[in-house]
Image (tube, rainbow, N blue to C red):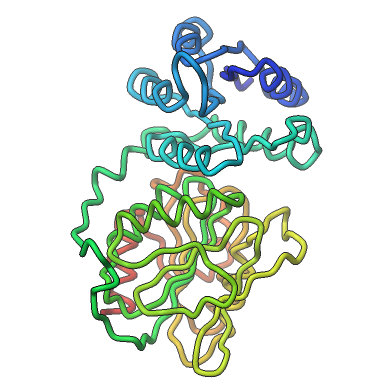
Length: 349
């Protein structure tokens, strides 16, 4: 049995989450807490395997509570976040502090009881309970790039010959934080990324990564032209493709039906990149739940791309890399701390 402690100041959320998780016979709700202080008092008594933690609470907020849990108990924590910019910013900070994943809280709480959302919540709890918490050390302390205070003033060559496509899900924000800030501003590539996240969260993620990186990072917009030394992150709830139009590579967004319940998907992005000619291409699959990216990375390999997968020891969840490796279309399996340098070696500056 997976023992869960639910921490939320809303009695309704506590009830809804309890009812959802009780539907799975492998999950046992050992208790609930109204705020962080209440939770910290109950953890040693209840001995949970995993904790769901509201981001915004009175008395002791979620971020402060998380830091205490990480330093004292090192238990896996899944954040419960509101679908607002503030909620997204706080959630990304929580992921940086060691939370393994998050569950977005819809405006209508009862929507959490829809079958696909219930399944996602249960899956995140079951996978999160098995997560290696020791992997999620604070990566921001390891990433200390030096860059111009105004990246627009940096003169770099306009042309580039490489496209790097990256796909990730659970654990992805922290993995990206250990790759993108290490890339030089004059890297001979344009980078496109799918990170499974809802709207608002992808914008906050792009802004956060941009603030610590030499390259320019933004949430992709329809019609964006790919530039050298830029990274484009697919917006939540939109599939993203990179296509060649005239002499440029252009971002195209659409809201075609979700694939495997996902929008955006790594498969769709990578298949579009695979079809681009006259550019060298590199595909990278990072930590994540599920198998998204396996078909896309296979398509890239068939089109003479170089392919990389994150190894199991450094993946928060090994699902996506494992599925891609199983296709026999991965050239290298690397630990997270070697991927940035490998990309630089492949594409050059």
